[in-house]
Image (cartoon, rainbow, N blue to C red; front, top):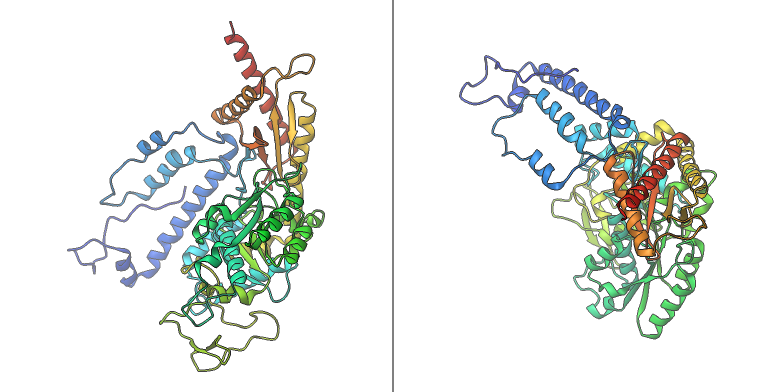
Length: 548
């Protein structure tokens, strides 16, 4: 393996009274020697990454780890002196790799963590090397332009108008919180671009209500707390037999709140729930939101990738009517963490909602005749929107479009991946994942003691193991069957043959398999069924043997 040893000798020009540092090597006239060491180290890291990826299918998906054991494994004082680089690499191999969930394995069927594209993995290193802070245009001009382009691609992908815009964020949780923040601003008629210090009184905020299905992401619960709302202001609504929000229940909740003198603020649609992959009736939700003058937010963190597919994009019919959309490329766009996004139908409203002007900001801001802020560049020229479309030709400062100040160059990996791969290939990968999830459901239907749950719409397949006797009747009651399903998941996890999760559906434990791996094929699904069958049979044999 390529690598380097930490040099023992120093330059004859170095001060012998102090140790050599990175700054010393930069001051030294032989700068190329430092870059050569970086090159060798880079090759060593590439080798390390390849070793990890090559070993995925040959080791356990999830090792027999415990918090106490791992804490002991990594227990050491802060090092006073640096170690040899080869030793550090070896520690990654012996300590980190064996105790890491094998996300990229074709035997991993867990949460929305994809096997990341290699070009995106390498783009992460390039972004770190450039270390751009994509907060302001001046500090990251190319990075800003690339993020603007990625945002435009995503807006176009979902059919949003030319006025739309957005920003990349760390993930869907922050995007959902942002969407609800925009809903509040619209309902109360306020935004940060207004040049007054006052705001609506607290009672006005307390009257606002928000509506989402009981399958909605937990980030909405966090959002109502972070935004100064009461948890009861978030109405968790029942779902139909396909785990989509019940439209009648939504209408009834809104009417009841209006009658109580409350102000319906935001209708939330889910395009791909975490539990089942269910997609709400997005067009119908848009109509209800418009009828009651509500902001319409769609959480498409998972299912938004279906827009890449020619075959399945109609599943998202109605998403183009949203006021804001959450999308997570680090889910089904096969990006490594982190790369989330918030897209907003009226991009200028997003800007107004987060517009601040710190003292060191190099653009003048004055109040216009209507009281709104007008911006001037460093040469005193008023900034006028480009007629080619929203923010075309503008110096966008992304810290004015969201919560984050310092911002990583996360758009680079998305931009490079789309450029290298193209939308059609992304769509084909998504379609293959959906095919494999449906194949799993078809194979499980052949097993008399496995029962499918949920819609099996996207790449998620939910099912329940229900052991039966010869005449087809369940051997155990619901509580005992819940325990057996947990035991099945835990046994497969412990042995490392595969990894999937369990969840709760309709009050009962369900096993949950998610397919999100562009390298996965039919044989991997067939193998999973054999693993399920073998472990289920072994659990029953062990149980029978233990029964007196």
